[in-house]
Image (cartoon, rainbow, N blue to C red):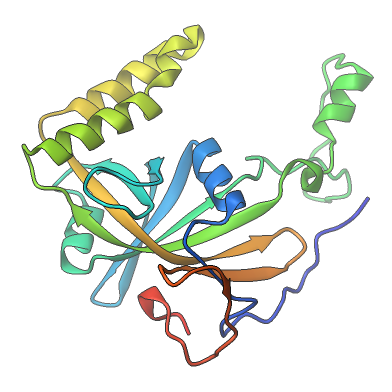
Length: 232
């Protein structure tokens, strides 16, 4: 079984930078397939992280740039933070949500399989690396969309279409209905994040930076170039 490394590629500076007009395909796939992402905001040197539903849009009628949509309570900590500091970071990944059993942890009690079949045991014991690939850090500029306008209405509709599909899945219908109430609530504000740059890390420890630019495709390893959010 291939094991994940305990050390990773040096990445304090720009690493394997790629410049493109569009997001890397694996980042798009992560954004489209992942149900949640982590939103990091910061003010007065105090960071804050929130788990968020999201919707990825390659562009909108109001912006030609890749955009990520979320909704938030106007009285939340994250809303207060991004109003003071619109620079945000997002983390999204395609990893499974649980650690596979190892069988060699002294602190772990013996598992009761309850008559579980050998096939089920094999599936549970699958190497996580075989069904996971990358994590993507995305830096962008957040904006609370003006209340009551056509842009807010349009973005909220797209977000609702994307996030409330669980209502059609029977046993989890209640969860979807709850999402609808949250997205459609009168006090909910729509947050639009214009994507600027980011970093892709794989389970082997390899790192690749990317930046969106209208200048065209290519690569640039210039260390002095400053990316969004102050990444050098």
